[in-house]
Length: 152
Image (cartoon, rainbow, N blue to C red; front, side, top):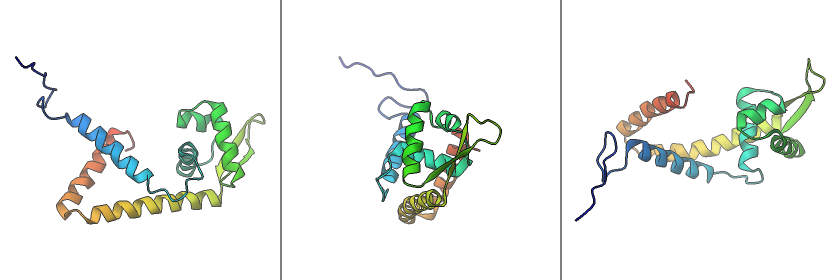
C-alpha cells in the first residue's frame, strides 16, 4: 500500500508549491548574480553595507547595523574595513557629539556602480535569450515581487 502525500494548498502533491518554486528560483538567481562579482576583496556583508549607504545615504553606525540586521560591534568592524579601503568615511554627528555619521565616498560609489553594472550586464545577456513575451512576463513578475518585498 502506498502512502498518500497530502497536497499543498492550491497545488498537487507531485508538484512543488508556487511558494517553493519561487523561493528556489530567487535563491538560485541571486547565487548566479553573486557569482558575477569581479572583486571578491570585500565580504558580502561589506558589500551589503556599502550598497545600503549608496541607496539610503549617510547614517549612524547603529542605524546601518539595524538596517543590515547585524549587531553594532559587527558593523563597527565592517565600517573599519570599508574605511581602510577608502569606500566610506566617518564624520561627526551634527547634533550628537557621541555619534558619528558614516557616508559613502566617491570610490565607494564607483565600486557599487561597477558591481551593479557587471551583474546587470550578465542579466541583460540572459534576458536577451528570452522571447519578448517571456521578458514581458518577467517585467510584470518583477513589479509583483517588489510589491511582495515591500519596496513599492
